[in-house]
Image (cartoon, rainbow, N blue to C red):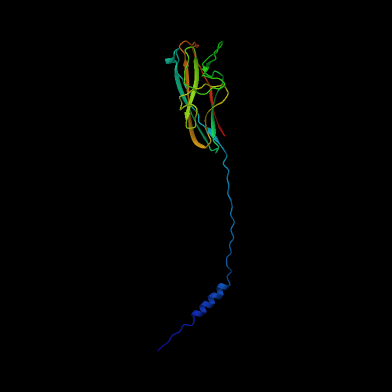
Amino acid sequence: MVRIFWKGLPGLFVCAFLILAGIPLALAETDNVSVTADMNSWITISDAANVDLGNFDRGTDSGNSTGTAEWTVATNNTTGYKLELSASTDEALRNDTSPTVYYFNDYNMDSTTAPSAWSVAASAAEFGYTASGNDVSGYSAGTLYRGFAGASAIQIATSALDTSGTATTARFRAQVGSSKYLREGGYTATITATATSL
């Protein structure tokens, strides 16, 4: 019987242990960095097309005309925005040709004016507007009207939230009563829409 023994293996373990014992262990430390950025508040309003109310005659049927302008407001302001309209003059729709100024009266205006149903007397000429949109209230979905108050801004829409774009439509309306005299020629109103972050 032949017995074979290998005596080299324990020596390898001892040698490896001695070699590894001489290598230092790696150490690690960490540091966190906070990265920040601030987004400035902004607000935009789209350009609306000019409005042509067409040609007028005396009388309710032919003198009744409407036209619309639409503005889209976008803002990242988290407390929202307001949209206001103003006119460049009192009695906004007017013919300033000398020597006498002729105009449509601002519809149903007094110190406590609220939007109301449209109604124009035979002896009157009136100009006003209504408003509609998701952020509009008080105009009964565009069925109630009011007039302008010159340069005094009138709020037509507001929201307490930011928006990527919300549209508001103003529908302008003018009417000449059957017995009302207005000089021939062009009548113009300059209306300004202003969007302001809250």
